[in-house]
Length: 409
Image (cartoon, rainbow, N blue to C red; front, top):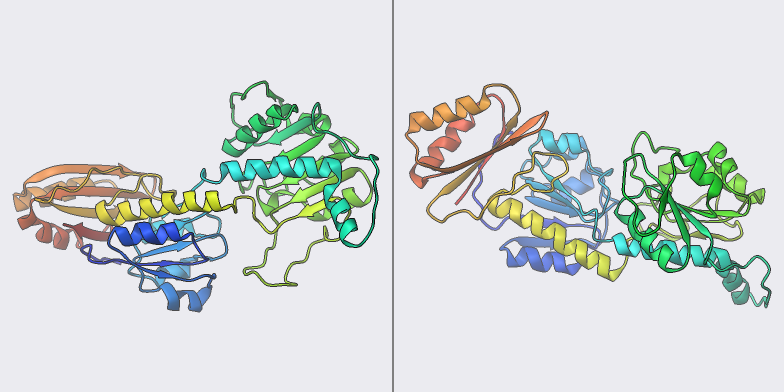
């Protein structure tokens, strides 16, 4: 696909009820914005966003290879969430479409949920509340514990894990952690050398790992058996990290005293009653939440700001910094006396040489040139005098490795 397009009122489609601040930012940047409060899939998705220049989604919309093949006008995708598992990143890059996500803005929200769940499980608050709603008055200290002095084991000590560590320590907990990466501890947290060691020592285990081949089914029957009798497991990470059938067995047997789970191997695509099923349903002292770890007003507003601003920078000056699937280039503002030619191409030997030969043949006055590559693609930006911009664009379309060309002025 080879296209060249000036930046005149790009169309943005935002799905899944993205925070209104995103619309405000994009409209302020000069874009036409269309809002939808739900996810779409397949042909219906293409019918809604197939002519868009930018699309914003959350976790329920699936952007497949077929989608990218059917959306020739698309220049960028904003994932207004942490994960990008719902997007075929390789197909997006093959069509020259940068993808942006936001991995940090909901860190505090998830960390606070972990602390709330830890307290609720240790006090049996969920079951006591359900009982009260049914008319059962059960006043007893049996099985209820303070979290002060108990040990929290954090699996994955990234931004969420480390912030959880700080909050837990402030509440008087002892904190241990395990990570495959060598990460320095916060406060008095102590690193352990293996997952098995953490499971054997912690009173509460909380998971904060990404969805990778190495983390799929990270916690199975064996790992659950290593946990202390009467301990708790929290999963606010990814649904495929825990074998939920094995977790249900460990809870029924009484080996674990409770669990809190916010993410599941299969989740409904829309907010529909009676659409959710899990072997964890109905078990005592088990808190189930519908993937709301980062769903606070504050987090969604922060994500709306961050992702929409990067989408605007992509369209307005070609910046791809923080994109998760293409070479990252941070660019200055385009000078009004120049045209900016953006050349997204397959990373093959000799491409830059051919481009520079074209520039020499044109006798072009080059103000600046930027190139960044990864293993598969190159992202080249040339700021050039206006009289040569159109000619360079036409010649770049003839370069065999070209994926797409775009001109800004």
